[in-house]
Length: 420
Image (cartoon, rainbow, N blue to C red; front, top):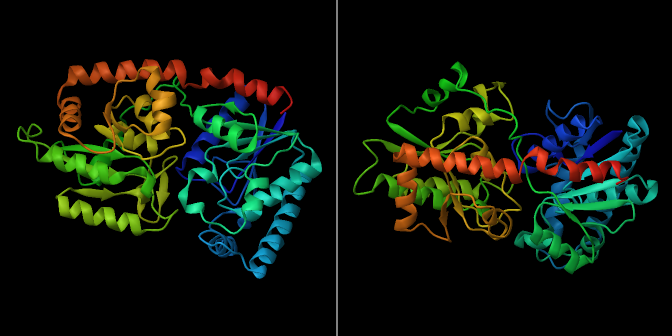
């Protein structure tokens, strides 16, 4: 079969792009072909087509979004602009389907969270018109995000995100989302959690990765504390700053070393105000903060500022991972830390408690704030090599059992080969 994956973007280190590539790898392993359509694509999202107006950052899209969300009323000219864009994108989608002739469409989050209202409308219309078998891979819903309230188009949101269509099967990434989708919309769904390729060995510390710490200005005298998430408020990164500050101020020290917080993913999806606040907090707490988003991508390469390192490179040289999110759809960074055999801090967000914690992982847990006990547990994981090895190997085994490609392959095979 030929499977078309469609979204606003397939590029960078956001969770939707990363999980889409994992699904694509499984589809190819099952013998299927994968093609892509998005507003922004990187080299991994090939072959396919790019329609710039499909990207949520397109200026015309941003104008519509700003006029709809945070408002109780939408002006007629905004409705007209939304409709014009939806019709344009509808034609682009139909043209893509005509040229590539896919047997199935997988929509990555574009029918779940309304980052791009015109695209959602266009997708709903095209799926209804063509009847092509489709899967909606829903990572998060609009009712889970306060920033989508109030809004002036409650009717559109209700019929589009996601739509109720006979040819569209719904996939969510956690059990809480399955319950809320059924309760709010009466729609059934299948849970496919986020995954890692645990059968594939992690990259070794080659000469390129070995030089990364030096490029970041770090030596053997530093503990590299990695915050591997986008810089948006729900990631709770202020707690990572607090943890690093208290580790460095611990009465018994860190064996003569300094903990440094490195942020590997970008800000910007929700503005830069949060990044500025974090930088100010780090200065106030005396934490060395390295915002290095421009140095990392899905794979190695060269950029305007020099060498681009892969996500694997930063995990390979890190000492500890902070994941103090207030809310997550599942937990990409959690699984990445487990896969790369790193100890980690986790805030007990709802999905972690419901779907991950019961699997028996051994991590440093916090509940809303950094306590002395949290600091002590993180310090022990940094300084005790025997404990550290026991933690990471235990977690790796749990991850491979529950959140590997092998664990979800039968479910994806049924979804695709069962006719969508």
